[in-house]
Length: 229
Image (cartoon, rainbow, N blue to C red; front, side, top):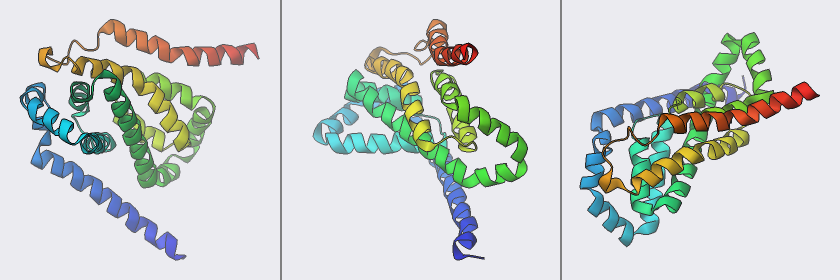
């Protein structure tokens, strides 16, 4: 057996243990207690002072923290998105959060592909082949529609897409475009952090329906084009 084949299981084991350790550390250390509206408001002066003194370092640390939460599908991303609006402003905050969100999602996509895709192919070969056929044809459209929904289980989407044949650049670009509206909405709300009482009123039912309709438009256009041909 070639050396590289013998090392693959060990690489997967190390990666799986690292993920498990990171998730366990999150719940043991409980950094989520700092990711609430009250905690963010209470620490606002310190955050703002640090950002003004070290802007590049503050943005880099924020970006890394956001990517880590997204890769591990841990809670707190919504609060960090609000904090981006309060710290960096609506425009810069949207840019930072959208890139961090897309980067974290793509890393999670690649992680699950590395850990589970070969097992999924062995276990669900024929059915996965049918799914891959759909993904190759219309996967980007479905992914875009799902990314536009603020309440969609994005961690589960990253995992499932990682098991398919979707190319990583396609996944990243579609995710980058799809998360942008929701990021802008939350970041803009975070710019008024002092007066924000809860996360409940940020995304209204009408806004969710609007995003769902926008996400469906490419799929509808694709279907109509296929029917016409």
